[in-house]
Each structure stands twice: as C-alpha cells, then as structure tokens.
Length: 407
Image 1 (cartoon, rainbow, N blue to C red):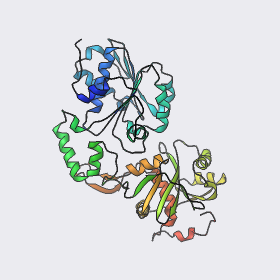
Image 2 (tube, helix red, strand yellow):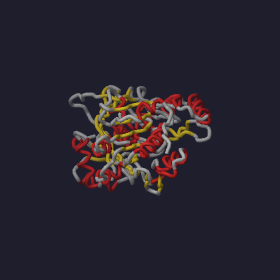
Image 3 (tube, rainbow, N blue to C red):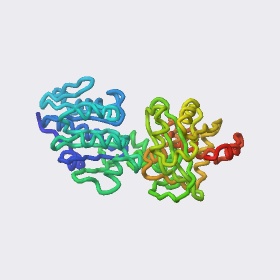
Image 4 (spheres, one colour):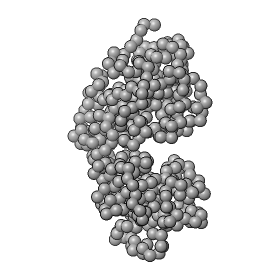
C-alpha cells in the first residue's frame, strides 16, 4: 500500500504527533471532523489500535461517527483494507478496531474495556463534568490519547475550562480551526455563512467562527447584557428564594436558590438530576441548596402529588399559579433586573442561560417570538422562585404575602 498523508499544515503539526490530549475546536465548515476521521483511518493502517469513538449521548449507531468514517474510507479508496459492520469497523491489515459508544449511559462498560489507545469524543461541547471525570483516567494505556472535536458553546463547560480558558494541561495540542482553514470550503456554505452574518452576527460568530454563544439575537438572555458569571460571597441574613421544576422522562428535576440585593438577582446554588425518585427529591434538594428547610419552595403546579409527598417529608412547598402568558411574563420579570449574576458553580444554569432561545423560521431565517422548549429547566425553576414578586393583572399575588411565615 502506498504511503498516504493529508497535505494540511495544522493536521501535520499536531494530529500525527504524540500528544496525550488533542483538542480541535472551531466553527462549521472547518473540516475538523473530516481531518480527525482521515487521520485515525491512516493511523489504524500503520499499527494495531483500539479506537473508541464516543459522544455524550448516542442512542443508536446513527448518532455516531460510523458513517463519517465509512465515507472517508471510501473516499480514500481504502475499502479493501477494512471490514465495516453495523457496530464496528476493523482494519484487515493491522487488526485495528473502531468501536462506538455513548459516554453518558455506557461509562461502566467502557471502564471494563481493556486496551483503548485512542478516544475520540465528537461534539464534545455536550460532554458533562461527570463523564469527563470518569472517562479521562479510563484511557490509561501507555501512549494513549484523547481527541476532542467540538464547537464551544459555554465558557463554563468542562473542556473549555480545562483547555481553552487558561494554560492547558501539559502534553496537549490545542488548535482552533474555522472555515478559512479549509481549502475545500464549498460555495453553498459560504452563501449560508454570509446570510447569517448579516441577519444575526452573534450566531454567526458562534456557528462559523467557533466563539462561545453569547449575544445572538435569537438568545433570550444575552451574556454581559442580562447576565454574567461570577464567584461571589453571600451577605449574612439575606432572604433567599427557592424554585423547583419537576422532571419528566429525560428532563431533569431542578432546584435553584437565589436572592436579591438592590435590583441584582444572584443565583447562588442549583440542584440538577435526571431520574430522581419522588421520595429522594426533598433530601437531594436539601443537600444542594443551603437553608432550604428555612424557606418555602415554590414549585411547578403540574405535579400536585409530588408536592404533597415533599410536604409530608417536612418541607415547606407551594405550587405556583401558572396561566396564559406566565412564561413570557416571567422572562420579562427576570430581564427587569439590572443584572442576573450566576455563581460559577451553577454550571447547568449557565448552560441554559447561554442556550435558551427563540425559534428561527427555517425558510426565512427570521427570529420569531416563540420560545424553543429546550434548555429551560433551570430557568423555569428560577421563574417559580421569583414569580410571587411579580405583579400581573390576571393573578393576584398579594394573597401569598401572609399565608406562610416562610415565604
């Protein structure tokens, strides 16, 4: 077989060299996933490797990079050297194997897989702190490597904090690549890019130039305008507010703890967990949210049976009154603060404030006033915590003032 090597400077500089961490990030059209796929294919031809291709969430093989690897094998005319099955790709020349796993749901099984030389995490911006904490020491073969490709969304994400916000760990190769680094960037994508640059410059910077999502016109809350991240100390004798949003199916149960000084809203703590049992909810919230048992929790009224159960456990809890326009009114109320200050430990709340957005019309690209029902669990809990402070013509909140000493 003739020697193959892709002629691109940043690929040659880092992807072929031995680094423990290879962090390749940037916007759409950069070719970073293609670069990694082709490099790993060529590496698998050189000597035996066990390459785990993972992402945080993978419900089926269709969600993996299996099809991308298959496509690049065919494009490089290397099909005769590989056996491609539904769940695995094997190199006949060296017996290298590509396997595919979702990290969130397969951590225990991955820990038991011996001999992983390379871990490639695609769409690594979705990687959770918990998954990284477990998976990083799992890749422990001598000379083993962890490759991550992603477009960063939030400065609070674990990979951004570890590799992009300061000095990265030793033995790291960190490179940012965008469309201008791709000599094969197609004209059709260039047209899309230029249109978005005019329509929503903040979203353009995120999608095409690999910047964190901060000030897109589609965002409900804009960083630095409506909210900031900070590490703050809480004054003594501050009145706290608690909100609770119940999880359904894959949605998490979320609690928030906040307080107000002047016209600044401080979010100090969060509780965030999926598949939380009803009988564990109160205790979990109390562990995450200091002073919880001294105040009333204001909760989503769609789960009266859960509210009753938590109340029987000895917690003060009330359902909020929701009605037509309550979400929009709640968002307007949150925006009325001079600033929302989110403690840096509230990583899920920070993520949601970054990603909560209005729908964009698929045909015109215009931003609508309809909210996307996603990335809003922490924000819903915050609305519930603050809702009794609002004055709305269709709901008399004044009756809430005196019916409980712990309001």
